[in-house]
Length: 61
Image (cartoon, rainbow, N blue to C red; front, top):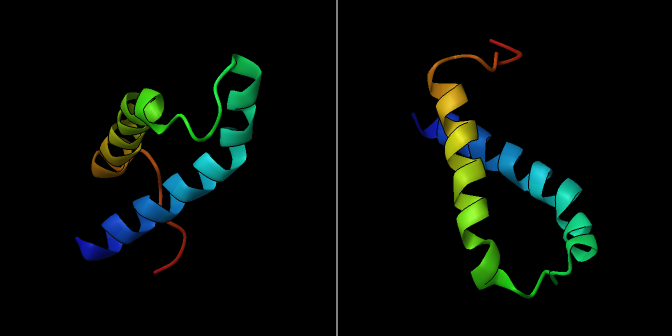
């Protein structure tokens, strides 16, 4: 289970790095963490759920 958690965290960091700068276009700054906490949690839960139901396939052994 630790491997899946580590993989999900890695995917989440990549998604956040890719899309976080776009929040400036929505009138929010990256420093406005309290506002985005709910969205962060919802996206993380969705990704974790997809891993648990094995919708996202792992590459490798």
